[in-house]
Length: 236
Image (cartoon, rainbow, N blue to C red; front, side, top):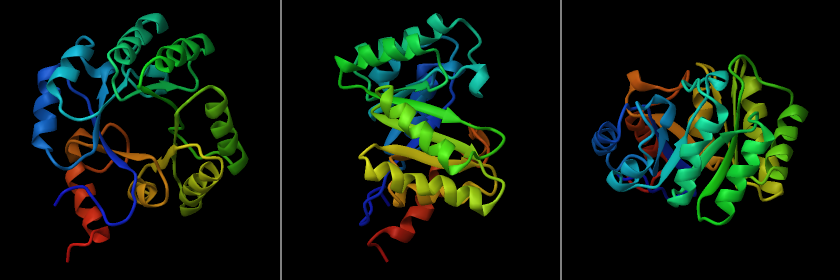
């Protein structure tokens, strides 16, 4: 079964933590037909092989270079961290992701780079311990939009079903102002939101190459997400 659905749904993005472009390509091949695009976690690579990834992977690519202070592996300078993202925009990758918490000067540099490129800028925000209030979440959307993001990404940690509902409600808020947002929750309680979000207006959800390669708590595998998606297709 392919990933197309009779219902309008958001995209399924496979997050890949591989040490080099060859490993990225193999991982994508192993999950052929299950996802719409691939997130390359540059912070997991031995060196940022942006150009080789674009040559070897036949799907739209999203480049992320996540710092240690937002759950990633990159521990160098911010200027060094930004460099491969600027290269990705120059090479016209489909997406680049930068944290909303990043210094404003970095956000402005990447915004300027994407203005002259078809590359879409994602500004992301993660909370690894809790889920903020509705007003705080709405404020994040406002900040992302005001900072020039093409897409917002808000990921929190759910402790209750109420947390999950609060985050998913953001999709309606974002839809009212025409701002694409990926919003879901981490953790066991939040797992359902990773699937539900793409059928409730979310721009995309993130999956792992396999159950043991999850890049965040509660992340589903590409195969498992595809199985769930069969419930919403026209196949019987």
